[in-house]
Image (cartoon, rainbow, N blue to C red; front, side, top):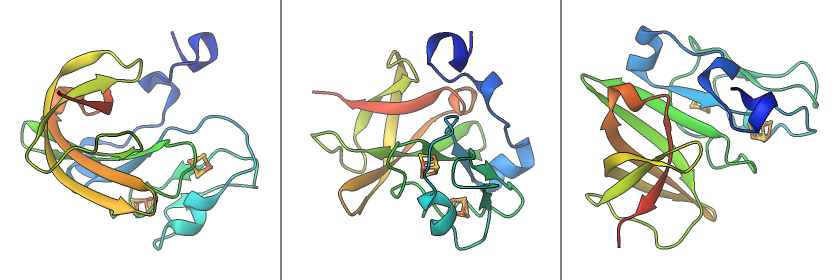
Length: 154
Ligand code: SF4
Ligand code: SF4
């Protein structure tokens, strides 16, 4: 099933980067609605995100994207992630606006797009940009395109 059928984005809905692009780290923009919004385009210092017009969906040029993460916190839809492959691991940076905020070194639940637990992940970095935290977790390479949220272990 895909986004049009059940509202949950699947990798079939996305134009994905190749393995080499994922090794350097790139933004995965999971924004499929034609809404008037474009702060992600404005936020990218490398011109890696483009839209034909304000109502278009954003497209990422994975060769231009450096994985700098500047686009993550500006997205009001929390739809931008940066994914980087490191050996057998995937580093996933995601926007996080819940409490409590995890700390570097914590082990958290890694969740898929439906909120189901895929396993555990280790928090590698916590950054605050405005009211949004950017949490970078380390998880399994095979979950690079599956894990898109976390839940703090109490
Ligand atoms: S991660 Fe950085 S370079 Fe890549 S699209 Fe976002 S702002 Fe641009
Ligand atoms: S800022 Fe977020 S919601 Fe707005 S166009 Fe970009 S990805 Fe979509």
